[in-house]
Length: 63
Image (cartoon, rainbow, N blue to C red):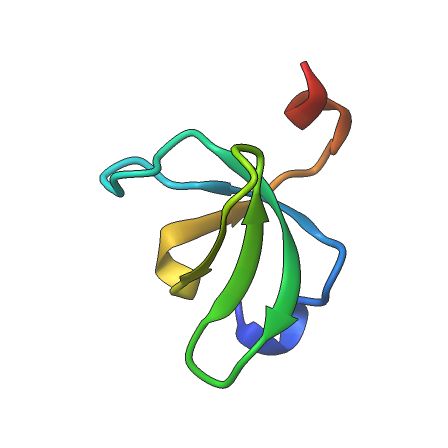
């Protein structure tokens, strides 16, 4: 995955190994080195591209 492939509004999940692992979120800003994500717990946080994975079905994040 490349930062150029990411856009605001995409649903992502925080990868295993990160303290916030398992949380879902929505990309709100894409920066050159990281993305800002509004997480399902209501917090907005910067994450490196290596710390997230795209969610193919956003409905999974609602379950």
